[in-house]
Length: 95
Image 1 (cartoon, helix red, strand yellow):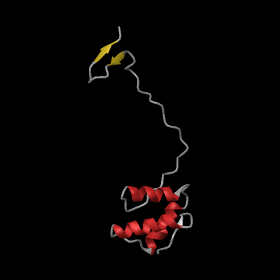
Image 2 (cartoon, rainbow, N blue to C red):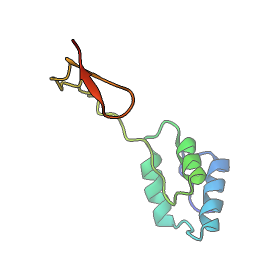
Image 3 (tube, rainbow, N blue to C red):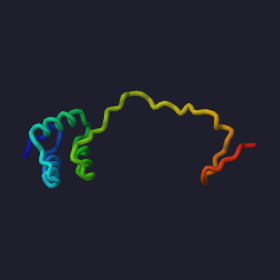
Image 4 (cartoon, rainbow, N blue to C red):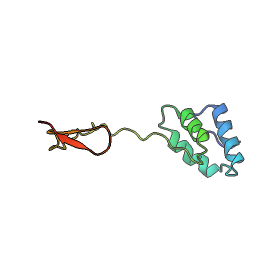
């Protein structure tokens, strides 16, 4: 078995290695090192691997860390006086 990242369970890593062999994309030592770097900061690396297997992805896609910025509020204005109907693009002005 190829080199397992320290923070991944043996069972999940074995599933990942088997999955990669099944899709004929076997892991290499180099790819394992890179995946270990990707998973190093993950809170739940087993979940990242399981998601990749479940979606038949070749790679691992850990969640990106949040930047700490709050999402900006919608500042679009000018439509307060209009009422949009739920069916189609019809709208009428509030009277």
